[in-house]
Image (cartoon, rainbow, N blue to C red; front, side, top):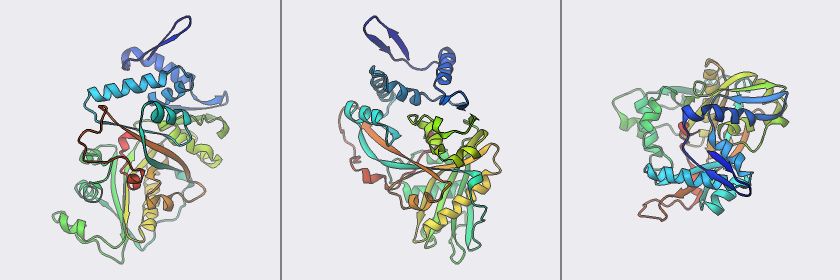
Length: 351
Protein backbone atom coordinates (compact mmCIF):
# COMPACT_ATOMS: atom_id res chain seq x y z
CA UNK A 1 0.00 0.00 0.00
CA UNK A 2 1.26 3.47 -0.91
CA UNK A 3 0.27 6.60 0.99
CA UNK A 4 0.51 9.84 -0.96
CA UNK A 5 0.16 13.00 1.14
CA UNK A 6 -1.22 16.22 -0.30
CA UNK A 7 -1.34 19.58 1.39
CA UNK A 8 -4.90 19.09 2.64
CA UNK A 9 -6.07 15.63 1.63
CA UNK A 10 -4.47 12.23 1.89
CA UNK A 11 -4.75 9.95 -1.13
CA UNK A 12 -4.72 6.22 -0.54
CA UNK A 13 -3.41 3.92 -3.26
CA UNK A 14 -3.92 0.17 -2.81
CA UNK A 15 -1.97 -2.38 -4.82
CA UNK A 16 -0.99 -6.02 -4.50
CA UNK A 17 2.07 -6.88 -2.42
CA UNK A 18 5.24 -7.49 -4.45
CA UNK A 19 7.68 -9.52 -2.46
CA UNK A 20 10.82 -8.41 -4.30
CA UNK A 21 9.86 -4.73 -4.31
CA UNK A 22 8.10 -4.39 -0.96
CA UNK A 23 9.71 -6.85 1.41
CA UNK A 24 12.30 -4.47 2.84
CA UNK A 25 9.88 -1.63 3.56
CA UNK A 26 7.22 -3.97 4.97
CA UNK A 27 9.80 -5.57 7.23
CA UNK A 28 10.78 -2.10 8.44
CA UNK A 29 7.12 -1.30 9.11
CA UNK A 30 6.75 -4.53 11.04
CA UNK A 31 9.77 -3.65 13.16
CA UNK A 32 8.43 -0.18 13.85
CA UNK A 33 5.16 -1.73 15.03
CA UNK A 34 6.77 -4.49 17.11
CA UNK A 35 4.68 -5.87 19.89
CA UNK A 36 5.78 -4.20 23.08
CA UNK A 37 5.88 -0.51 23.81
CA UNK A 38 8.91 -0.51 26.07
CA UNK A 39 12.58 -0.86 25.20
CA UNK A 40 13.10 -3.77 27.56
CA UNK A 41 10.40 -5.96 26.06
CA UNK A 42 9.39 -6.95 22.55
CA UNK A 43 7.91 -9.86 20.68
CA UNK A 44 9.18 -10.80 17.23
CA UNK A 45 7.72 -13.08 14.58
CA UNK A 46 9.11 -14.26 11.26
CA UNK A 47 5.73 -14.28 9.47
CA UNK A 48 4.37 -11.52 7.25
CA UNK A 49 1.07 -10.39 8.73
CA UNK A 50 -0.66 -7.72 6.69
CA UNK A 51 -4.09 -7.79 8.37
CA UNK A 52 -2.52 -6.89 11.68
CA UNK A 53 -1.10 -3.76 10.07
CA UNK A 54 -4.49 -3.05 8.52
CA UNK A 55 -6.15 -2.91 11.90
CA UNK A 56 -3.47 -0.53 13.08
CA UNK A 57 -4.37 1.70 10.14
CA UNK A 58 -8.04 1.64 11.11
CA UNK A 59 -7.08 3.87 14.03
CA UNK A 60 -5.80 6.64 11.67
CA UNK A 61 -9.35 7.47 10.57
CA UNK A 62 -8.12 8.09 6.98
CA UNK A 63 -10.35 5.55 5.25
CA UNK A 64 -7.39 3.24 4.72
CA UNK A 65 -9.11 0.23 6.25
CA UNK A 66 -12.18 0.68 4.04
CA UNK A 67 -10.02 1.05 0.93
CA UNK A 68 -8.14 -2.12 1.80
CA UNK A 69 -11.35 -4.04 2.41
CA UNK A 70 -12.82 -2.95 -0.91
CA UNK A 71 -9.65 -3.94 -2.73
CA UNK A 72 -9.48 -7.33 -1.04
CA UNK A 73 -13.12 -8.04 -1.90
CA UNK A 74 -12.59 -7.02 -5.52
CA UNK A 75 -9.50 -9.22 -5.77
CA UNK A 76 -11.37 -12.16 -4.21
CA UNK A 77 -14.28 -11.77 -6.63
CA UNK A 78 -11.97 -11.57 -9.65
CA UNK A 79 -10.44 -14.85 -8.51
CA UNK A 80 -13.77 -16.66 -8.29
CA UNK A 81 -14.60 -16.30 -4.59
CA UNK A 82 -18.30 -16.17 -3.68
CA UNK A 83 -17.88 -15.28 -0.01
CA UNK A 84 -15.44 -13.48 2.24
CA UNK A 85 -15.04 -14.65 5.83
CA UNK A 86 -13.36 -12.52 8.49
CA UNK A 87 -12.45 -12.94 12.13
CA UNK A 88 -11.46 -10.31 14.66
CA UNK A 89 -11.23 -10.09 18.41
CA UNK A 90 -14.48 -9.64 20.25
CA UNK A 91 -13.63 -6.24 21.75
CA UNK A 92 -12.24 -4.67 18.56
CA UNK A 93 -14.88 -2.00 18.00
CA UNK A 94 -13.06 -0.33 15.09
CA UNK A 95 -12.93 -3.51 13.01
CA UNK A 96 -16.47 -4.54 13.91
CA UNK A 97 -17.85 -1.17 12.86
CA UNK A 98 -15.92 -1.32 9.60
CA UNK A 99 -17.11 -4.84 8.78
CA UNK A 100 -20.76 -4.43 9.78
CA UNK A 101 -21.62 -0.76 9.26
CA UNK A 102 -19.48 0.14 6.26
CA UNK A 103 -18.85 -3.16 4.48
CA UNK A 104 -22.16 -4.88 5.34
CA UNK A 105 -20.87 -8.14 6.77
CA UNK A 106 -23.08 -10.28 8.99
CA UNK A 107 -21.98 -11.80 12.26
CA UNK A 108 -21.86 -15.59 12.22
CA UNK A 109 -20.79 -16.35 15.76
CA UNK A 110 -17.98 -16.41 18.28
CA UNK A 111 -15.08 -18.82 18.57
CA UNK A 112 -12.74 -19.35 21.50
CA UNK A 113 -8.99 -19.60 21.09
CA UNK A 114 -7.44 -21.73 23.83
CA UNK A 115 -3.73 -21.59 24.61
CA UNK A 116 -1.60 -23.53 27.08
CA UNK A 117 2.21 -23.62 27.45
CA UNK A 118 3.64 -27.12 27.20
CA UNK A 119 5.50 -26.89 30.50
CA UNK A 120 2.33 -25.85 32.31
CA UNK A 121 0.48 -29.04 31.44
CA UNK A 122 -0.07 -31.63 34.11
CA UNK A 123 2.46 -34.46 34.09
CA UNK A 124 -0.40 -36.90 34.56
CA UNK A 125 -0.50 -39.62 31.92
CA UNK A 126 -3.73 -40.62 30.19
CA UNK A 127 -5.88 -43.01 32.18
CA UNK A 128 -5.23 -46.71 31.82
CA UNK A 129 -8.93 -47.06 31.05
CA UNK A 130 -8.60 -45.04 27.85
CA UNK A 131 -7.34 -46.13 24.48
CA UNK A 132 -5.70 -43.55 22.19
CA UNK A 133 -5.02 -44.69 18.65
CA UNK A 134 -3.76 -43.00 15.51
CA UNK A 135 -5.99 -43.22 12.44
CA UNK A 136 -4.76 -43.69 8.92
CA UNK A 137 -5.20 -40.65 6.71
CA UNK A 138 -7.96 -42.47 4.83
CA UNK A 139 -9.82 -43.27 8.07
CA UNK A 140 -9.52 -39.67 9.25
CA UNK A 141 -10.85 -38.36 5.95
CA UNK A 142 -13.79 -40.77 6.06
CA UNK A 143 -14.70 -39.99 9.68
CA UNK A 144 -14.51 -36.22 9.23
CA UNK A 145 -16.54 -36.31 6.02
CA UNK A 146 -19.16 -38.57 7.60
CA UNK A 147 -19.60 -36.47 10.76
CA UNK A 148 -18.81 -32.94 9.58
CA UNK A 149 -19.23 -33.01 5.82
CA UNK A 150 -22.52 -31.12 6.00
CA UNK A 151 -21.31 -28.44 8.42
CA UNK A 152 -20.47 -24.86 7.51
CA UNK A 153 -16.81 -24.13 6.77
CA UNK A 154 -15.95 -27.78 6.27
CA UNK A 155 -13.12 -27.71 3.71
CA UNK A 156 -13.79 -29.39 0.38
CA UNK A 157 -10.11 -30.34 0.21
CA UNK A 158 -9.95 -32.10 3.57
CA UNK A 159 -7.83 -34.74 1.85
CA UNK A 160 -5.12 -32.18 1.08
CA UNK A 161 -5.12 -30.88 4.67
CA UNK A 162 -4.66 -34.29 6.25
CA UNK A 163 -2.01 -35.30 3.71
CA UNK A 164 -0.03 -32.07 4.15
CA UNK A 165 3.47 -32.49 5.60
CA UNK A 166 2.64 -30.08 8.43
CA UNK A 167 -0.16 -32.37 9.63
CA UNK A 168 1.23 -34.70 12.28
CA UNK A 169 -1.77 -37.00 12.15
CA UNK A 170 -5.18 -37.74 13.62
CA UNK A 171 -5.95 -39.58 16.86
CA UNK A 172 -9.09 -40.97 18.49
CA UNK A 173 -9.76 -41.85 22.12
CA UNK A 174 -12.33 -44.20 23.63
CA UNK A 175 -12.72 -46.33 26.73
CA UNK A 176 -11.17 -49.79 26.75
CA UNK A 177 -14.34 -51.29 28.12
CA UNK A 178 -15.82 -50.85 24.64
CA UNK A 179 -14.75 -51.91 21.18
CA UNK A 180 -14.49 -49.79 18.04
CA UNK A 181 -15.45 -52.29 15.37
CA UNK A 182 -13.63 -51.81 12.11
CA UNK A 183 -10.95 -49.54 13.57
CA UNK A 184 -8.20 -51.99 12.71
CA UNK A 185 -9.82 -53.25 9.53
CA UNK A 186 -8.61 -51.04 6.73
CA UNK A 187 -11.05 -52.51 4.23
CA UNK A 188 -14.34 -52.04 6.12
CA UNK A 189 -15.09 -48.32 6.16
CA UNK A 190 -18.81 -48.78 6.78
CA UNK A 191 -18.31 -50.73 10.00
CA UNK A 192 -15.68 -48.25 11.20
CA UNK A 193 -18.10 -45.34 10.76
CA UNK A 194 -21.28 -46.95 12.03
CA UNK A 195 -20.10 -49.06 14.99
CA UNK A 196 -18.34 -46.45 17.08
CA UNK A 197 -18.18 -46.70 20.89
CA UNK A 198 -20.87 -44.96 22.92
CA UNK A 199 -18.39 -42.17 23.67
CA UNK A 200 -15.36 -41.15 21.63
CA UNK A 201 -13.28 -38.11 20.65
CA UNK A 202 -11.03 -37.16 17.76
CA UNK A 203 -8.50 -34.43 16.94
CA UNK A 204 -5.75 -33.72 14.44
CA UNK A 205 -2.46 -31.89 14.98
CA UNK A 206 -0.75 -29.29 12.80
CA UNK A 207 2.89 -28.36 13.27
CA UNK A 208 3.27 -24.60 12.87
CA UNK A 209 6.84 -24.40 14.18
CA UNK A 210 8.30 -24.60 10.66
CA UNK A 211 5.95 -21.91 9.30
CA UNK A 212 6.56 -19.19 11.86
CA UNK A 213 8.11 -18.77 15.26
CA UNK A 214 7.75 -16.07 17.84
CA UNK A 215 10.27 -14.73 20.28
CA UNK A 216 9.87 -12.78 23.49
CA UNK A 217 12.84 -10.55 24.30
CA UNK A 218 13.48 -8.76 27.56
CA UNK A 219 11.45 -8.67 30.73
CA UNK A 220 8.24 -10.71 30.63
CA UNK A 221 5.99 -7.78 31.46
CA UNK A 222 2.57 -8.63 30.08
CA UNK A 223 1.57 -4.98 30.35
CA UNK A 224 3.66 -4.30 27.25
CA UNK A 225 1.51 -6.45 24.97
CA UNK A 226 -0.47 -4.40 22.48
CA UNK A 227 -4.00 -5.68 22.85
CA UNK A 228 -5.20 -4.25 19.53
CA UNK A 229 -3.28 -6.80 17.47
CA UNK A 230 -5.00 -9.52 15.50
CA UNK A 231 -4.35 -12.73 13.55
CA UNK A 232 -1.45 -14.90 14.67
CA UNK A 233 0.30 -12.32 16.80
CA UNK A 234 -2.72 -11.54 18.89
CA UNK A 235 -4.26 -14.98 18.59
CA UNK A 236 -1.23 -16.32 20.41
CA UNK A 237 0.14 -13.32 22.23
CA UNK A 238 -3.12 -12.04 23.66
CA UNK A 239 -3.13 -15.34 25.50
CA UNK A 240 0.11 -14.34 27.21
CA UNK A 241 -1.62 -11.95 29.57
CA UNK A 242 -1.17 -14.53 32.31
CA UNK A 243 2.29 -14.00 33.90
CA UNK A 244 2.83 -17.75 34.15
CA UNK A 245 2.55 -18.06 30.37
CA UNK A 246 5.12 -15.34 29.65
CA UNK A 247 7.63 -16.75 32.09
CA UNK A 248 7.49 -20.15 30.42
CA UNK A 249 7.87 -18.88 26.85
CA UNK A 250 11.46 -17.65 26.66
CA UNK A 251 13.51 -17.70 23.48
CA UNK A 252 12.14 -18.65 20.04
CA UNK A 253 9.04 -20.80 20.17
CA UNK A 254 6.39 -22.35 17.98
CA UNK A 255 3.23 -24.27 18.79
CA UNK A 256 1.05 -27.20 17.80
CA UNK A 257 -2.39 -26.29 16.50
CA UNK A 258 -5.11 -28.83 17.33
CA UNK A 259 -7.93 -28.91 14.79
CA UNK A 260 -10.86 -31.10 13.82
CA UNK A 261 -11.90 -31.48 17.47
CA UNK A 262 -15.03 -33.60 17.65
CA UNK A 263 -16.69 -35.99 20.03
CA UNK A 264 -19.82 -38.01 20.61
CA UNK A 265 -21.42 -39.50 23.71
CA UNK A 266 -21.87 -38.49 27.33
CA UNK A 267 -18.18 -38.89 28.20
CA UNK A 268 -16.71 -37.18 25.14
CA UNK A 269 -15.46 -34.27 27.27
CA UNK A 270 -13.29 -36.53 29.42
CA UNK A 271 -11.97 -38.31 26.34
CA UNK A 272 -11.07 -35.02 24.68
CA UNK A 273 -9.14 -33.97 27.77
CA UNK A 274 -7.13 -37.19 27.52
CA UNK A 275 -6.35 -36.36 23.88
CA UNK A 276 -5.32 -32.85 24.99
CA UNK A 277 -2.82 -34.32 27.46
CA UNK A 278 -1.63 -36.76 24.80
CA UNK A 279 -0.96 -33.83 22.47
CA UNK A 280 1.31 -32.30 25.11
CA UNK A 281 3.34 -35.48 25.30
CA UNK A 282 3.94 -35.24 21.55
CA UNK A 283 4.61 -31.50 21.66
CA UNK A 284 7.56 -31.99 23.98
CA UNK A 285 9.33 -33.93 21.22
CA UNK A 286 8.78 -31.23 18.57
CA UNK A 287 11.70 -28.80 18.26
CA UNK A 288 10.92 -25.32 19.61
CA UNK A 289 7.31 -26.25 20.37
CA UNK A 290 6.36 -24.49 23.57
CA UNK A 291 2.57 -24.39 23.48
CA UNK A 292 -0.68 -26.02 22.37
CA UNK A 293 -3.34 -23.91 20.67
CA UNK A 294 -6.83 -24.68 19.38
CA UNK A 295 -9.92 -22.79 18.24
CA UNK A 296 -13.45 -24.04 18.85
CA UNK A 297 -16.93 -22.57 18.70
CA UNK A 298 -18.20 -21.10 21.95
CA UNK A 299 -21.38 -23.10 21.30
CA UNK A 300 -19.46 -26.37 21.07
CA UNK A 301 -19.88 -28.47 24.27
CA UNK A 302 -16.19 -29.38 24.05
CA UNK A 303 -15.22 -25.76 24.66
CA UNK A 304 -16.38 -25.91 28.26
CA UNK A 305 -14.41 -29.07 28.93
CA UNK A 306 -11.15 -27.71 27.51
CA UNK A 307 -11.18 -24.13 28.80
CA UNK A 308 -10.74 -25.01 32.47
CA UNK A 309 -7.45 -24.73 34.29
CA UNK A 310 -5.31 -21.88 35.60
CA UNK A 311 -2.65 -22.30 32.88
CA UNK A 312 -5.13 -22.24 29.97
CA UNK A 313 -5.71 -18.80 28.47
CA UNK A 314 -8.80 -18.00 26.43
CA UNK A 315 -9.75 -15.22 24.04
CA UNK A 316 -12.81 -14.84 21.83
CA UNK A 317 -12.86 -14.16 18.10
CA UNK A 318 -15.97 -13.07 16.21
CA UNK A 319 -16.50 -14.41 12.68
CA UNK A 320 -18.17 -12.38 9.94
CA UNK A 321 -19.43 -13.22 6.45
CA UNK A 322 -20.24 -11.34 3.27
CA UNK A 323 -21.56 -12.71 0.00
CA UNK A 324 -19.81 -11.17 -2.98
CA UNK A 325 -21.63 -10.08 -6.12
CA UNK A 326 -24.22 -7.84 -4.53
CA UNK A 327 -27.05 -10.30 -3.97
CA UNK A 328 -28.25 -13.49 -2.37
CA UNK A 329 -28.07 -15.37 -5.65
CA UNK A 330 -29.26 -18.96 -5.87
CA UNK A 331 -27.56 -20.25 -2.76
CA UNK A 332 -29.02 -23.35 -1.21
CA UNK A 333 -27.36 -22.45 2.10
CA UNK A 334 -28.61 -19.87 4.59
CA UNK A 335 -25.90 -17.99 6.48
CA UNK A 336 -28.06 -15.83 8.69
CA UNK A 337 -28.08 -17.67 12.01
CA UNK A 338 -25.10 -17.36 14.33
CA UNK A 339 -26.18 -20.62 15.97
CA UNK A 340 -24.98 -22.42 12.85
CA UNK A 341 -21.45 -22.23 14.24
CA UNK A 342 -22.05 -24.88 16.89
CA UNK A 343 -19.52 -27.24 15.29
CA UNK A 344 -16.75 -25.71 13.21
CA UNK A 345 -13.85 -27.38 11.45
CA UNK A 346 -11.19 -24.66 11.68
CA UNK A 347 -8.87 -24.97 8.70
CA UNK A 348 -5.31 -24.98 10.15
CA UNK A 349 -4.02 -23.23 7.02
CA UNK A 350 -6.12 -20.19 7.90
CA UNK A 351 -5.15 -19.90 11.55
